[in-house]
Image 1 (cartoon, rainbow, N blue to C red):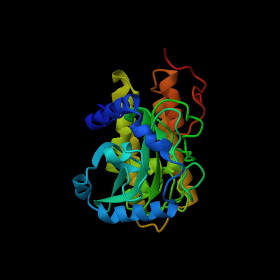
Image 2: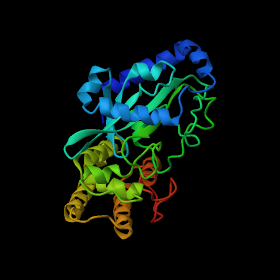
Image 3: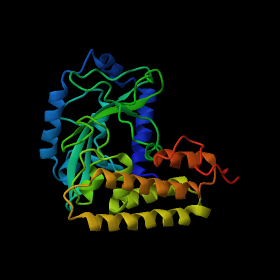
Image 4: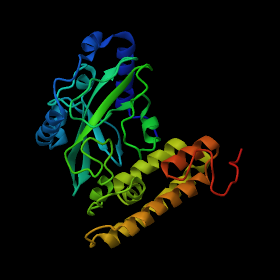
Length: 311
């Protein structure tokens, strides 16, 4: 997968800014606390969902689409100046996330964030869950290859490391994991036109997502990042076969009122089965371990059949 040129530009400019400029003294050390509380950010998110119903309106206010359409978050639209000004403003989210539901783009969450120099922590926000922040410091490919099963923040203990971007999400549609969780695994079901389970699992949701155009495209991008040319076609074929199975399941299930726990387990097993097939194509332990983490197959470096990876 070729990196998104806009993402590359933003990351490059941000890196230069973080390394060369102290971000206005890091806004007086980010002040003692945020001037707003969690309720203010909830209201700000819902105002944004009204103001930016149409991505074209977001574009007029300086937001630009960046990166892929993530299965549990949507497509990110970034306002670079809001990210870099060192403040948190409920009426000025740094990111808007859109998902196509019922044939139209729908703003499903916003994210508030800031760029931090090494050794700095984000300001506390009254009323937020413990450590709602997560961080970004790598490339878009790095983000795609991270498992997202645990949403408990992600910035703790790294304040002394290098420059990074920290943010928290506020969901404007129901999220079984909570309003401030990073991911919403109901989204693949909603994209597919299905009712969301009360407790959708990440792995079941990822398999359902394969049956939609956005989910298949995302997974093909993932294997494009991971696999070398000599096995890439076979890896893509495995993904496409799984996507056909997911699409058939979606088509057969549209008349159902809900997805029960037995079906969720079966869907999760189908996702793991795809992972097992992809691990069998992995040319080395590193790629195999990444696939195993993404598909919930066990610790890195392990294979269910005990066989070694090819040299």
